[in-house]
Image (cartoon, rainbow, N blue to C red; front, side, top):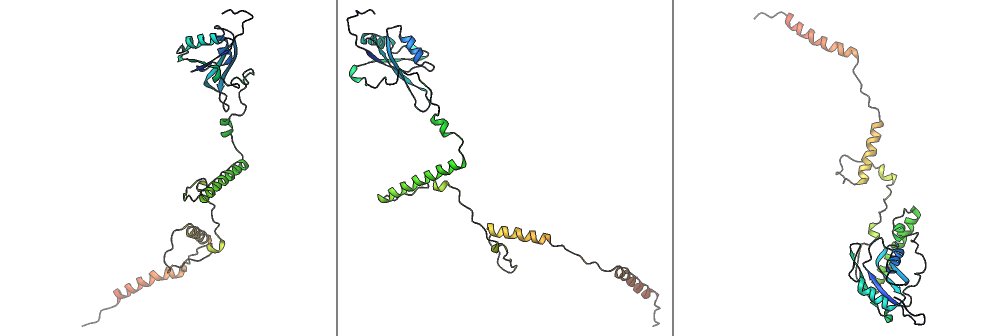
Length: 236
C-alpha cells in the first residue's frame, strides 16, 4: 500500500486470539509486517509465570490495513490453530493498551509458583502458621459479631496437639493385685514398663539342698525295703 506523504494515516488495532505456543513478539512482528507497517504490538502475559495467555493486540499504521488483516487472517489455520482476528473500533481501544510494549519482555525472576514451593525455614513456617491462625481468629470474631452461629475446624484443628508431660510421682505408684484391673491408658502402660524394668534388675537366687541330704535320702528308702524282706515271719 502506498500513500501520499501529505495524507495523515489513522492507526488501526486488531485483536489477535488463539495465538499458537512458541510465537512471541518478534515472530508476530515479522509475520504481520508483510501486510503493512506494524507500529506497536503487545502479547498478554501472566504476571506470575511470564507465559503467554494466548491473545494479543497489533497496531498498524493505517486502519485500512488493519481491516484487511482482520478479514484475511480470521479463522486462518496457523500452526494447527484457528486464529481469531477482529478489528477494534477506535472508541474501544484503551489509551493504556500498549503501555510498556516498547520494552523488551523480561521473565519474572521470582514467579509465584517458585515462591510457593520454596523450602521454608522453621522460623518462616512458624510465622506463616501464626498468620493463618490470626486471620482465622479474626474471621470467627467477625462472624460472631454479625450473629452468625457457624463453626468450622479451620487451621486450628490441623495443628498438632501438645503431649502432656507425665509426672514422676505417677510412675512410682504401686499396683495392687487385689485392686480392679486399671484401664489400658498410656500412663498405665508406661508404669508397667517401668515396673518390669525394675524387676529385671533384681537378681533371683535359688537355694539348693546340701549334698549330704541328697545322698542319705535314697539310702534310707532302700534300707527300709531290705529290712522288710529280711525280717522273719512270725509263726501262726
